[in-house]
Length: 218
Image (cartoon, rainbow, N blue to C red; front, side, top):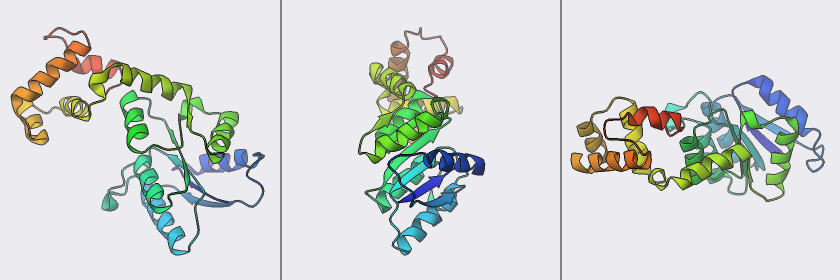
C-alpha cells in the first residue's frame, strides 16, 4: 500500500508512521511518500503518476507553505489535486483551523473521506480515522460535526456570497469595493449585510464583524 503524507512538520509525519505500524488492516508492506509543503506535495503526486505508482491513502495537513505557481494554497487544494489525479485514493484532512466556515468549505468543496481537527486527534483516534476511511466509510470528528451543524442551522451562511461579503468586510473593503468584486450593486450588498445582521439578531448599529468572529464565521 502506498500512503502519501503531506505535513510541514517532519516529527508529526514520523509520529503518524509509528501509529500506523499498529494497524491491523494495513499490513507490513507500506510505502510512504512524504511532502513538507504544497509545492513538494504537488511534485510528489506528479512523480507518482509518472512512475505509475498508485496512491492508496493520502493524509494531508491543511496548513502548509503554499505553492503559488500552481495556485495550491493549502491542504484542501492538495486534496483536490490528488483526488483528481488518483480518483480512487482515500483522503484524510487534519487541520488546526477551528473556524466553522473553513471546515464547512472543506467538507462541501473538497469532500475528503476523513476530516478532523488536530485537537480532536490522539494516537487511537488517528488510527480509527485511517482504518474507517480505508474500509470505505466517511469520518467526521465530533467537533467538525458540531461546527457543520451550526452552519446549517444558520442558512444565511450556506450562501458563499454572504461568506465572501463578511470576508471582504473583515479585511477592510468598503461597500462599493465589495460590490465591484462581486459584480453586483451596492444596494444588493447592503441588503445582504442587513440580512446577515438579522440572522445574528443584531441592531443596525451593532458590530457585525465582532459577532461574526465570535461565531467562527471569519
